[in-house]
Length: 295
Length: 275
Image 1 (cartoon, rainbow over the protein chains, first blue to last red):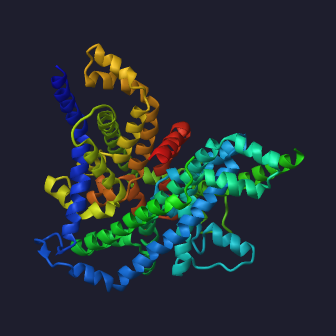
Image 2: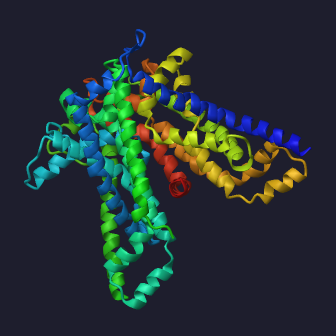
Image 3: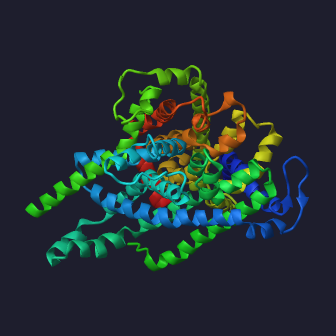
């Protein structure tokens, strides 16, 4: 009887997990492994793939376009992620009270995260339009210079950084806020008794106790920025010159694979990007032992 | 005490001002969508439209630009991703949380890999798979690969694991089978978790861009994100129409967010802390 029960359990488990697990194996894991093989071939999707060994990788490391994409990806991660998380922490601290204004602010700060990334990028393209955009009109009103935002690669990159921050501050803020709300009041009461300054309270109580959430935000934000595709697509749509300057690896893979039909070369770049993301995530998991504080 | 009050007023004011700055683009876009083309290229630029009831841009969008059919496509795709994803993920979540079976941990760990790697790595083989299946330029190609979800499964597994095991044990004693326990005991207790993860899933499916962009080819099958992206930079479309499209495309998710904000935030926080 118990043995029969066990096999019955197995049967149900197999039936229950089958749709999800088969789906994930077919549409996620098989393509992942397959990509590694495709990256060793020359393939334009019209003819049979031709095995060329590591030639794609050799070409990759000497290709100035890919080098620029790599630098852009790193730039966006290094600049946008710390600012986003810093701002989110300040926001979370400001929101850590119950009042009408904090409720309203929480909603408003979250809103950009919900809308389509494509739309978010377009909104800011209009606002930064050099002639009829509100930003330049305000700058003009204040007597400041009105730059052509989308002709200078650095200005365009900073606008993208700005949009990343605008779109993700609410999401990270909500996670950090949950962390702040978990901190026991007793710690702060002790601080009051000891007469600790505002800064010491933040430095020695708030910050260490919110590190698990900070760690999660950091891991996730880095992955999100490395994967960022929609913003680059929209900001680069108007001009090839801008596109070249802001293109990231995540965008380059799409362009190489589906515009130039260099599937093998694009797969090689995808493998490299995945290795970068995986090693950064792994590294963070190792380093977290040094700074993340679990109660 | 008095000092605290002052800082509180100060921080509330700063918060309010920053909130208005965050909100400003939305208001600006909405007002621009009510402007005529000459109004958008006029100096000095104006914040308010001349006529608040000028819905011409929306009329063009739904008329000449076929936004009604993009809307329909988006709704079909989102619904047919959402419902199967919730159902299949909760089935798998139940099995992972409550049943012992061989290779359980191994399967679970392989699924984790799917979570870490960017979509870009799967793009090319997935695309040729879709071609082989004959799903290129069809909704099947967008929907089916998006249904299985690691995040939703993990989220619901956590939820089921947090329920007391004594609940289902007593049901087994009475002779109930796994499907019965799953459907009559576990699922009713997962309602709020299903709502939370369902809203996240809806927004993700509604906003998705890269995968539909690769699968869908003919204009009448486009989803909103592609339609909006295509409007940009065309000589036939003006900025005021573009903003109307932006409003139209984001309105459902914004409304969904306002209605279910609590569940939305709960979903994010819980997947954040436990994931």
